[in-house]
Structures are given as structure tokens and as C-alpha cells.
Image (cartoon, rainbow, N blue to C red; front, side, top):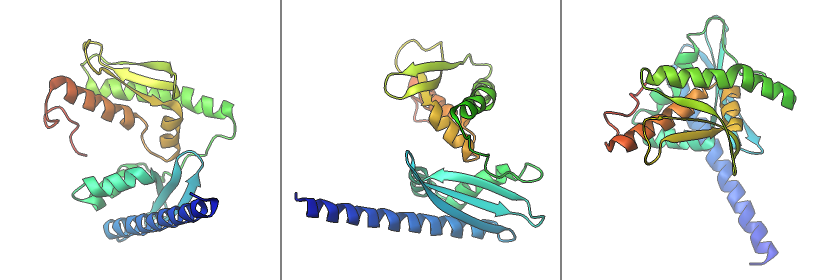
Length: 214
């Protein structure tokens, strides 16, 4: 393939991605507006150097209090394809946020590695550990930091009682931080992974051991 052909292919791929992003953004706004008819809904798309397109939406209530939440392109695509009621799925993130009095806008991003470390050590990691243990109590759950050869520092969690097969899920710390900065619960990543482990270990279809839909 010549350089000209490669450039043309890259341009076509970029155009397809831009069109996909536009469609997903417009569709998301339509779904949120349909649910929050009496509130004000807006949003924006930014391109992250690691995660690609990031979609953030804000719902403002009658009192002028704003509630913001962000999503990755991949999870919006999956959410719309896998959920029978995409509007209910997407709006559920905001319904939970709107239980917070006074609004809940996106957290301020850390301006340095020290600030990022302080957020992880002081908020994200302790929250994730307590959340997974609370979710599966009285089941014994292990949770702690580890260093992954490919993904770097990770927070892993698992069930010590399972000795064979998959018994641990691990999430890169940078991904947990990204979820926190999008006003999402980073513990959900670990909790979903642990439910998948339970499904595998119990050899079930996932109906009995899987996480109930919120």
C-alpha cells in the first residue's frame, strides 16, 4: 500500500469515527432529554490521548443544580446494544447522582502526579476496597494493590476460597482514576469482575449469581 493510499484510508477511518461519535452523542442527548423532560440537558465530547472519545453529559434541575457524568465510547456502544431500554440504562447514572443535594459536577482533574496519587490513596482505593467487601459480605474478599507486568499498578480483588480457575480480577489504577474523574463509581469495575468470577466458579448461566440489574 502506498503512502497516498494509507493516508486516504486513515482519512476514511477518521471520518467514520467522527460520524460514529456524532451519532452516539446525538442519540445520548435524545435519550436523556426524553427521560429528564423537565430538566436541562447538555453535553460535550473530548478526545483523550489514552481513552479516545470521552462523552460527558450534564442534567440541571429546576433549582439550577447540575449533575454531570462521563462515558467512554466503547461502553456507550455496548450499553445501547445490550440493554433493552437504553434510556433507562443511561439515565440511571444520573438518577443515582441526583440523590446528592446541591449538585454533583465532574471532579477537578489532578494537576500533578502528586495530586493524582493523593486522590487514589485518599479516596479511590479505600472506597473500592470497602465497596467490594460490603457488596459480597459475609463472603471473604481479598483486595489489594499489585504490579502487573503489562498494565502497571493495579488494584485486584478476589475470593480466597477459590483455589482453581479464575479467582482474581484486577483493574489498572489509571482506569479507576478515569472513572472517578467521570463521576462514576470506580468500584463498579471490580464488582462486575467479581460477579463474573462467581458465575464462572459456580458454573451457572449468570442468572443466579450475577449482579441484579439496577
